Image (cartoon, one colour):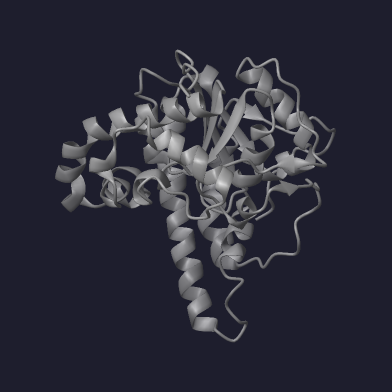
Length: 304
């Protein structure tokens, strides 16, 4: 069976920011809108040689159909991810030569892959939640896709806390080291994200806080749909299908979820995180345009 023709220029909604920022639930919600497909963390396609980490029949068939349309096996493995996409690549001088060698081919495969996802899904909008600012910077340069950039942020205490939950309260030294490392990673990610965000045309960039999305998911999605020029309506939040995302957090292992916009559970707040992230709290207030909750009093700024 011949796959349907790809849109001339599929619109790619790229969710950029730190890990654990709520991109998966945002992607799932948008993926339930008409003419949208939630592809998950697409950067994993090369790393996983085109195979989703969690395989079920529908997911396997979808990504097999995508792979049949993409000629990118020469880039399989982690090299492009390490040299081009990961935030640490900007700091690794020893990888800059390899980066230059891979860039042209990387962009060819990235465009081919996104178009193949749109074709296979029969959708004109592809949601990529790969996070990495440097990947977003390369997708900006693709002529065959139209990039819409969503810079998603979350209370930094919540991000750090989610990465410490597996540690016991007695592992004090390890918690301090990991807290420092997470804050350093957040600094690098936010610095690169701010650079990429400001280079993106104003009409195709949007700043969004995870807390505002939780406060009014239907209202936020409605604004996003208008922003990308889609006539679709927000989905039924009581029965969201996961779809066939390539990779993401454990949420994508299911098939259907009910969205419940509940307040975040109590999180551990550290003085180190407060001090290190305070400059970004101030800087992010200057980013525009901002997509905020439509409910009076619900648009929030995280408390540090």
